[in-house]
Image 1 (cartoon, helix red, strand yellow):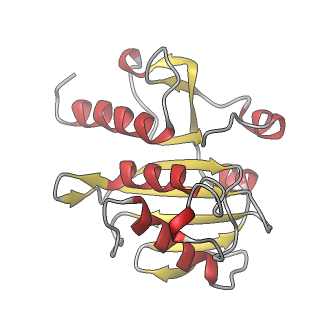
Image 2: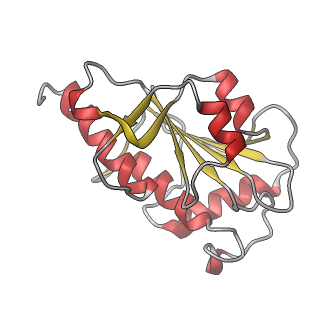
Length: 192
């Protein structure tokens, strides 16, 4: 199983935002929607061996985590609005500390990055990390940030984690996921 976690520093934690304004009213939810699409979509298919966690830290709070599970996922189309609609529906549900399913393959719960890091081992994607092309093996879980850098609190949480890089330049989260999955595909299919 491949896992991605993306921190949405401004991302709405309630389903009251407009699908017509994902960058504004939803706190740059567009960035997270593109990351979801990059994690799952192939040409004419979905990656079934992927989980994608969105850690939403915006208003009105408290922080929530939305989980997409590729093996169960339905109703996701390759556009931002489709992913945004699934996130909005999940955030419209009352939720507690355990994941609650909103649509097939989409779950929501209260919870922050610290909780997610305690549950799963994620390496950090960072321009200063080890080049994925030279790594003997790649972790199956990766943590990324949205259009903001990690906060000081988040940096403290991830200080001891492995760091990997997809290249010398800073890329958008969704592009980084695509490059990383391409490297994983190449290795899995003997193209290294």
